[in-house]
Length: 129
Image (tube, rainbow, N blue to C red; front, top):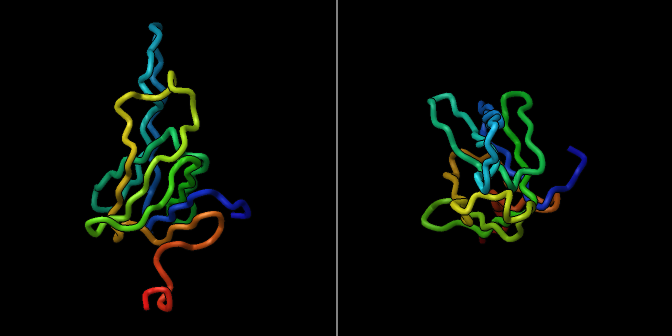
């Protein structure tokens, strides 16, 4: 991946990516938000991601990688990796009012987290001392 994304999460192997289809309707749908995006794990677990923040998603060699444009990794809270929405990438009228502003992930689901091309999690062993 030659690009440096603001936030790139690489999930463990094996994982797959599932994107719901756009809802086709004759009626105008207002502030429903985009269709869902999920990381699928072999045990049947489906982890929902904030689709409106995704700027890149790939499923190569059995591993899902997802880049977010307006999210920031803020560390761990209560044993969970925590991310906060810091910038909206779409106009308010295209976003769901029920959208979450915080995403948490179990560290067991994640292989690595990078910010601007630098690995920020897991911490290197000399960063823990």
